[in-house]
Length: 42
Image (tube, rainbow, N blue to C red; front, side, top):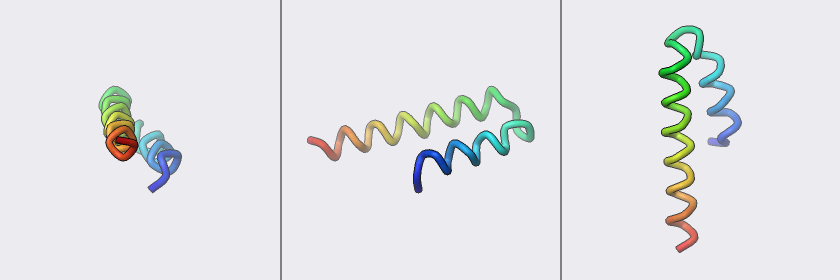
């Protein structure tokens, strides 16, 4: 799933669940993708 699609989905649900929680989730998702990319490069 492209990161842009994930980001749009998180932005869409932000007003429902609370912006701070969504920002935290977005950072966690972004961090996980970076870790996966780094592991794949090794």
